[in-house]
Amino acid sequence: MSSHATQSVDGTARTDDVLRLENVTKRFGGVVAVDDLSFSVHDGEILGFIGPNGAGKSTTFNCVSGAFPPTDGTVYYQGEDITGVPQYALVERGLARTYQTFRPLEDRTVLENVSLSMVPNKLFSFSEFRTDVEDRAREICQQVGLTEYMHQMPDELPHAGLLRLEVGRALGTEPDLLLVDEPFAGLTPEEVDRTATLFRSLREDGMTLIVIDHNMHGLLDLVDRVVVISFGEKIAEGTPDEIRNDPTVQEAYLGGEL
Image (cartoon, rainbow, N blue to C red; front, side, top):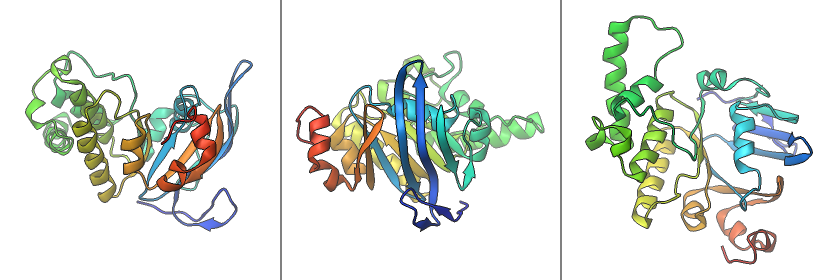
């Protein structure tokens, strides 16, 4: 993975900032969904990105991943300004994301869904593509725990299987940075543990991850560092233990203990 010398948000030089947001704001008419947000993500870490419902987390992911441009501010990926670069171009550069709402191709098997995520924009040779891509798609299915479901249709998968298919389709694009939106929603504690193990294995393979989730126990056990936003603004940043004990964060979550 490439590493570029950059300036982190606090002005100190870093060589391992994969992603950096500087004063990012997103408005929808008169509504400010993301408000002057700055933070960075270091190479090889799993960053938790949390906040109450409506805090602006998914909107931030959309600004980073190219779904729509920020109203103001700058997004840097691997040292390059990618503000407003469209999603397909960012995928080619190694930035991918999953979605809360799963969107598999319902008329294709699990294996075909993963295979199709790997189709290059410029197809070289169909025969080469079929052989190489199917082999790699099988590896990804095995990696995310879908080996037994490879030849089933998406509507035959349990909820946890659909999540793994969403991750598998993202992995088909060979990302360096993966944005994961609500991976623990609807999972049993055992499935949360298995999913966390998968994310740790991806990090061990050299990937950097940003994870949004409302399952605080599962998320804080997984991540190295946490950024917390509320009403589009960053209210805290630190280690999981620092965030658990932060009174501002506890207040944002309606006084609940984290």
